[in-house]
Amino acid sequence: MPLLALALACVGFAGLALAMDRHHQRLWKRPASSAARWLGRAVGLLGLGAALAVCLLGAGGAVGPVLWLGLLSVAGVVVVLALA
Image (cartoon, rainbow, N blue to C red):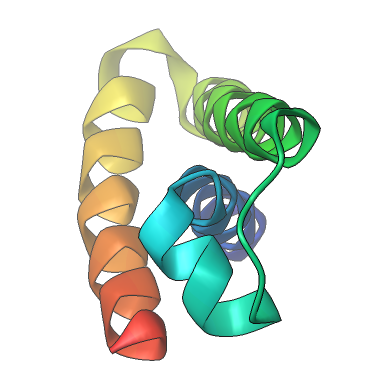
């Protein structure tokens, strides 16, 4: 379960990063349209929310949020290193 939550968090952070003009321009070589920014934000929020749901279902209400915050830290570093 933690690997699934980590993958969802990575997808979420990648979506939020690609919603930014700088990262979108660097990856796709063209400016981001408003639809692309909206889609990136939606994918980002859904990915992070799904990661939280997986952590809550897998580890319970007491440990799940703590696990989620730890996985967010790891996923953030992974996405930063991938974009650097």
